[in-house]
Length: 156
Image (cartoon, rainbow, N blue to C red):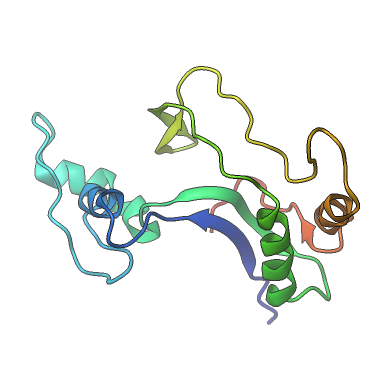
């Protein structure tokens, strides 16, 4: 039986930072160590109910999904995917994230932009113009040599 692995890009807060601690407490588990974490008490929600409704995301840990899970095209290795992702992300300049609010994405609660959020800078432009290196990075992503979008909304 051939197993078709899926790959994604995620961001997780620094392990020593307050957001990692907060996310671990919220979910009831430190995803890095696997250690249980005391969840907050939020009356009128009972501790048992809070543990129940955070059971599924507890397995994933506190993170931000940058690119949902996808399958790699035949002949493309995980190392190819990582190299392509690094090349693309190297061209993305830092930007200030918009204010966030709690919202629903499918069956999950998530932090989502509050109101209309400006789009982050595109990795394929410099001063509004395409450059040869930006075009190479864009081709790497869009030519279909690396990725196929076959997630169909699944998250495993």
